[in-house]
Image (cartoon, rainbow over all chains, first blue to last red; front, side, top):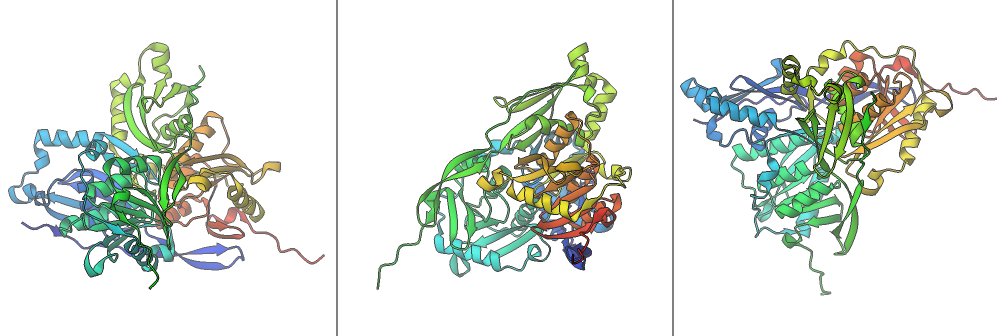
Amino acid sequence: MSLALSSCARPATYEVDAINERGETVPTAIAGEHPLTLYLDKRELVTLMTLGAAPEHLTLGYLRNQRLVESLDELASIQVDWETSSVAVTSTSLATRGVSVWDDAAQADALAARLARRTVTTGCGQGTVFGDLMDEIDRIELSGHARLTEETLYTVTDRVRRHESIYKVAGAVHGCALCANTGDERGEILRFVEDVGRHNAVDAIAGWMWVESVSAADKIFYTTGRLTSEMVIKCAQMGIPFLLSRSGLTQMGHEIARRVGLTMIGRCQGKHYLLFTGAQRFVRQPVRAWA
Amino acid sequence: MSLALSSCARPATYEVDAINERGETVPTAIAGEHPLTLYLDKRELVTLMTLGAAPEHLTLGYLRNQRLVESLDELASIQVDWETSSVAVTSTSLATRGVSVWDDAAQADALAARLARRTVTTGCGQGTVFGDLMDEIDRIELSGHARLTEETLYTVTDRVRRHESIYKVAGAVHGCALCANTGDERGEILRFVEDVGRHNAVDAIAGWMWVESVSAADKIFYTTGRLTSEMVIKCAQMGIPFLLSRSGLTQMGHEIARRVGLTMIGRCQGKHYLLFTGAQRFVRQPVRAWA
């Protein structure tokens, strides 16, 4: 049984009038922000505030990154309905046997326990991670063979800079890009997602990678946002060995990246960068000898 | 019985080595980020990721903004202990009668119900709001008399720009400022808090205002972060009629500000700004006639 996804992206920007310092009325584009309540076999799980650009992949990535669903086989469908600001996730079990796996008392208890443990993470806001993500960190093993060259780093920075984005039009969103690190596509953007919540953007990419069976070891992850603990944890969980940002980082983001052996590079702007951790995977440009 | 607060701010920045594009090792300041688990009469409530600059006020503001505590009289002490990354909030009831109010079955149920409703808000991350904040919005009445002049707006923008900040040293944090809007202090910063979580910064200011009995109607709130729904809700809840930011806004932030009648101004930079809502409280500079 294959997973049925709706396709309900919302318009990304809306126009409102503002008055500027000269007293002029200025039509101004602003980013969408919508509540989206997740129902897992009719159980209300959580309400995400989202731009709504990739709600199905966001839902999928959220379920995966929160470790609420282990395998795609468990899911029959993900249906977004903006009329009711909701997304209905239906398990294969409910769809085929008429019985939700969450009807099982032990499963329901496990879900309740997961939901009860809350970590309000950094983000710019107070993010939510269920369960003990930190315990997981020590079990993650990132590719030892992958390498990132300085040239590819500059390509990624340049591609992201030139990418059409909601940010350029309306601001108030964060973007994430998944980039190739092999072959002719090296450094090119494979997927770009923006959201009013930066963790939503990561989750939407994770969901897309999951449903499309995209490998992680040969990819590069770029975020416009800060490298906080949760951002580093999510990148490591996804199995991507390279995390790039044009912003800075926090102490715990640094500590976790070091511990898990992630190659993390901040302040990527033009030909500038700061390599913080995982230097063994980074290849600086050889200095060219005069011909 | 007066509220006993510990005083346990943590160092705001730490130094790590990074390697730049010239292959040089650069000592780099990064912002602290620490988990802080809140216990309410020994009940684990939530874990916040914080810079740790104002943990007691953060705790207090969090409890208030989530509507978990209604009155300061309910609380006997707030004790932060970084050794265990925790903050113990003790109710007056437990301190004086040896019985927690949360031991009462109905109270415990009410708390559990509050904690069960989760909205993962925008922020940059996935913030948490317990209960139905949106329902509250329609009951909020902001001062109809308060006025903000263009001159004061420029003063606030200038004061924030010149303020010493962790952001200037290490990036990766958001700042909030509470500013005066009366007398000689008009436009001056009364309180400035930075945090890795921007909602933490707001909560810390709310907690400080609460414990110090600071009035709200004659104040201005400034945030370096985006004007998302939760930021607008928090400002309105605090009763502050003016919300300023150097960043942009989201559609829902705009919609809520309009609904609650908040005066909201974005893109404040130098002598530029965009007035989005609540224009009736804003006074543009009179054009000076030639002398």
